[in-house]
Length: 312
Ligand SMILES: Nc1ncnc2c1ncn2[C@@H]1O[C@H](COP(=O)(O)OP(=O)(O)OP(=O)(O)O)[C@@H](O)[C@H]1O
Ligand SMILES: [Mg+2]
Image (cartoon, rainbow, N blue to C red; front, side):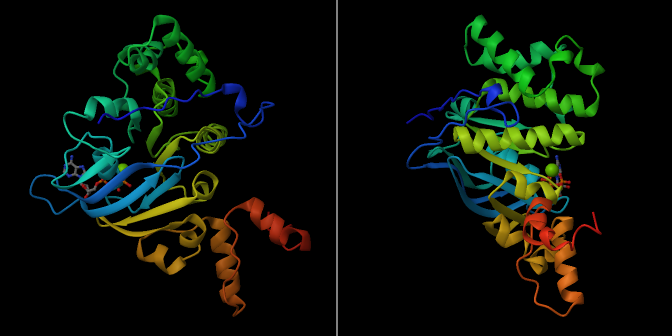
């Protein structure tokens, strides 16, 4: 059996804020397993396991945040899932097919990995060439490649960089160009390692909209890491927490981001607004209940009573 990529169009004009029409029938009726890790372990040289017996399944169309302290194994896990590292033990399945040497070429069409450091991702001389590299390698016609690159440049707001040499780009620009390269390939499974790193606030907001658009309206599957916890509820519904190479929690974003003792154990923090309401409840000797995850949620739940106006 071969991995069958499900390439779905991405429409730039469908992004929120641009007078979009939203597809009313997103994703497949019965979602299948998109990514699966089974007792997955990996170690560098003689070191202890960077990824230690990790098990999880991600369904098609799910948006999942992978969180954990520095060195907890997130990047290593993502490289294993994308087939860039070979597991010491256990296995990875992509769309039900075990990842191995034979299937890795097919997997390239299904799974796109955004590297934590974009310098490791961009290798052509110029921006346009780099974004075109993926679709060219996938065998698309020149016209299709041009169209895909044009759309990717528009979506990631990098049109002005089209003819720039890669080595002249700033860090944030590199991240956006690397993302454009992924968008141009339209792989149905996207693994994004720190996609918000180096992006200015407007670009982050735009990327949040893009991620939501791809997962909610087009059924793309997304696994992403970020240390910006306030963005997690904006982009993901489910969260995985890693600590010292182990997966220590797997649950809904609401359940895990309001579990402050768990986050503290994992050396993580909830979004600032959640922490504020948690600490306020403790100071007032109340049980911390109904903790908002976003500013919008806080304003909706508590703003009408005038309690927030003096803070923000
Ligand atoms: N090439 C390598 N050689 C040896 N050890 C490595 C290598 N890459 C990572 N490690 C080690 O593996 C462990 C997991 O690293 P990894 O990069 O997966 O963590 P991470 O969760 O992505 O961290 P961060 O949040 O800082 O990006 C760390 O202890 C790290 O030092
Ligand atoms: Mg990392």
